Amino acid sequence: MEVIIRESTEAACGMVAQIIARKVLENPETVLGLATGRTMENVYGKLAAMRRSDGLDFSACRTFNLDEYIGLEKDDVNSYHHYMNEQLFKHINIKPGNTHLPDGTANDLKAEARAYEEKICACGGIDLQLLGIGRSGHIGFNEPLSSLMSRTRDKVLAPETMAQNGPLFVGGDMPKRAMTMGVGTILESRRALVLVTGEEKAAILAESVEGPITSRVTASALQLHPSCVVVVDEAAASKLKDRDYFQWIYENEPEWDDFR
Ligand code: GLP
Image 1: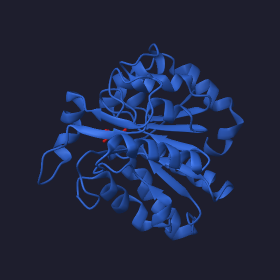
Image 2: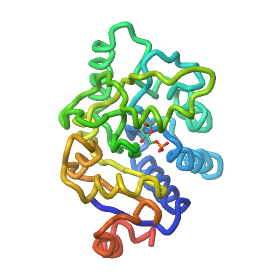
Image 3: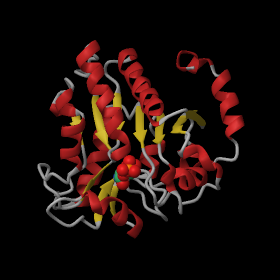
Image 4: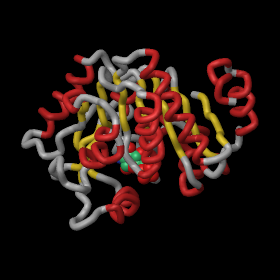
């Protein structure tokens, strides 16, 4: 794991967007794992701008989102299908058939979860998985005590997540369950790219990165990932103990030469 501390939210989001763009340029058929949440809106805005100004080409990319609420139709304004269309897909040249999110309205959720895993495998696995961290320490909707070997499945959401995401719901109540990729699914991605910004995430970021690996904080499982980059702003980094060490690695790692 590498932790990269950037001077501002804007710089952190810009770096994450650049890492994604580089990957797409290097391999136009990249399989991207995508995340939702307020944190990602800035990144998606930047990718849309790169499409408009530099013609960044997403036409051969395939995408798999982490999660979706159970019971929400695709066109429900509160669904992650809607979020992805509004924040990213409609602004870039991705083929709708190449985008995938779990179907939270499936009658047989277990069959849908299995089919989702199979689709990821059929595409050759996820090359780059974008992730945020929720206040409960979740990645995707892998709430505390999720097995660190879990696969895509339905989960009951933690009260903390209800409190975090509930205020975003318009014209209806937030579902109490969601379908999410498992921690095991996420750990199989070839690279994990985590973005965490803002002071309210400082404590959970420190637990995830510097604390023990525990199912109580599923983001801590990313310490097991063979290639995980965590990009944060100064506010989110404010409770890290080893920031000088993280800075040292960042300053001396050739992969980041263009960013410094
Ligand atoms: C949701 C998603 C997570 C995301 C989290 C963070 O709960 N399921 O994948 O990381 O939100 O949200 P925000 O960026 O709004 O803090």
